[in-house]
Length: 125
Image 1 (cartoon, rainbow, N blue to C red):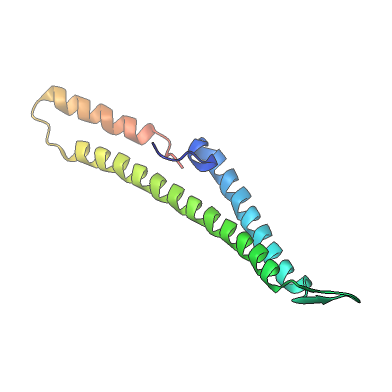
Image 2 (image 1 turned 60 degrees about the horizontal axis):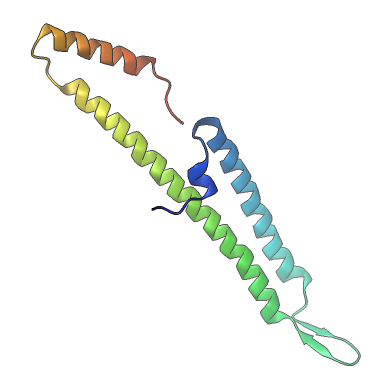
């Protein structure tokens, strides 16, 4: 059974565009967070009685933010691949049906109805 994520559970059309914008925004925030972690935290913090070595912790935090960005990008890419694969299958079925030679007037009528139905459908985005 495939792993269920927010991407696999959302409806297609407009919700996908909204979700993509939200994921893009979250990835940008995570990139900024990783940059801020590296820029604002000193590698070594000296206090009067002790010294704190922050480099390892700082890198772990920044790397976790970058890992989340990669996971978002991977999920979006997989969703896009799945969506394109589905669209290609639909278009291939349409093309296969439209190139079949009708052998009777009934088949010709059915093919004409099918062609009109395909034209009237809104594309799935």
